Image (cartoon, rainbow, N blue to C red; front, side, top):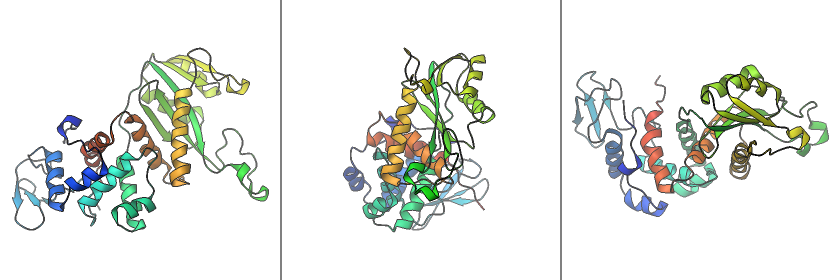
Amino acid sequence: MCKKKSVTDLRDFDSFFELVNYFDTEEKCVQYFAQLRWNGIPQCPYCEHEHVYELKGKTKRWKCANCRQQFSVRVGTIFEDSKISLRKWLFAIYLATAHKKGISSHQLSRDIKVTQKTAWFMLQRIRLAFAPEDVQLTDVVEVDETFVGGKEANKHKSKRTPGTQGRSTKTKTPVLGVIQRDGKVYAVPVENTKGATILPIIVSKVEAGARVYTDEYYPYRALGKRYEHSYVQHSADQYVDGVVHSNSMESFWAFFKRGIIGIYHHASKKHLGLYVNEFTFRYNNRKMSEGSRFDVFLANKTISVLLTRN
């Protein structure tokens, strides 16, 4: 199993220009990623055996002496089965992790000289690798939901759907968010906001005994059995009661929606989870430099997400 690399093990690129100049050949990209992935000792991605040997040829490949499988540095990563050069993959990753609000497939296609369709494919694989880590939140934790979808007020009267106020999921998809104050956030789309749906998620991400702050939504009342639970009454225009509020979670929702509306314009229910993962990664690594975010993603995310082989 590949161990996560620390940022100190990697080169910190200060700008996209520096990255492009450094990775001036495909061979250099392959060597860099191989060193990063295996720390100088290639390991079989199929059986994890270290007894492998390099094959001769234009393309750098290895063969495992244990299971006899051949492999390249791409196998078992988001680059697998892709004809796109590793060089352009690295460019795309830097741009996708550097932009605070994300980058559209149209903009990426212009920046790295690929078709819009190819750029969209690359961004989807990158978003797949944005999958959140298994966080455990403690101390002071805020919980809230938001709803993603078109506003009924912006639709023609004849096209509006009745009964979509409040927490209705008729035309919108709910997203549950849990954030440790001054810490990390975890967010995930859910089918509905019923207690049976959202409470198990909260329990799995928040350590027992934490102070949990929410609004007055009834299902949250059950949190008092496991946590020190307090809430504010949004329906009565109460948003802050001393230290009790969900402003950190609200700030994340604003950050998330600015990116969706401003860059992507729309996120379908089918792909919403990938966009949520993208902005969760960006928020949780917001204090890093652009180069450090690139390093962390390349070292830990591209390798940890294994693609299904047919």
